[in-house]
Length: 234
Ligand code: ATP
Image (tube, rainbow, N blue to C red; front, side):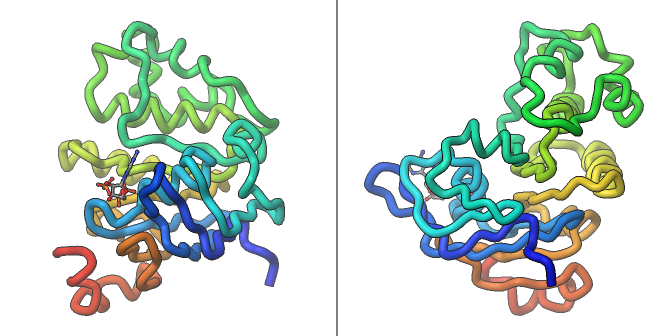
């Protein structure tokens, strides 16, 4: 079988003296939506940040399209085609929607242009001239996702995109992720909301104490809830 788009092997990561990841193993194939599930503090965010080269120290292997990225700086990792949409979204309050979209540079060919983004996100088009401060939480999340589609990344890593959003907006985010997948993007998603995860993902990894403790297909997730209860706290 062809090598997965992303292959993380025995990834360890430290913040200063704190050893946070203890040998993460993850594979994501091109076109898949894969989630990292697990409790607060399990190491999900740190996994995304480590893939992106944003932790103090890491060891192990992160291969993307066959290229080794442990040891590479985050700007090179971005140019390789990986983007991270952080939990705090990072919308610039003083800039309007279009300016926020245009801010990050295109790092490689294949990024969506503004027209394509506004076709995919009609609500953002309506708000094109609204400053970041005037956007709802859901609009900010859409903008944060739209912004990384422009950069040309192939693998989009989304950290808790549904955090703090009303159920109807959560459904919208779900539709957006499914559309992104249809357009051929690959998504690695951190989620606490496993019911939401179930509506978008092909597969799930369960993370606990900085390592993967279980892996299930989406079809298996409901049946595995008894077994996963301990890790997911549901
Ligand atoms: P959450 O949903 O709460 O973000 P998580 O599974 O994403 O949970 P992480 O944010 O990756 O967990 O945190 C894993 C561990 O690393 C936690 O014990 C946390 O306190 C610690 N940690 C996170 N960021 C830092 C940091 N900058 N410096 C030191 N320790 C950190």
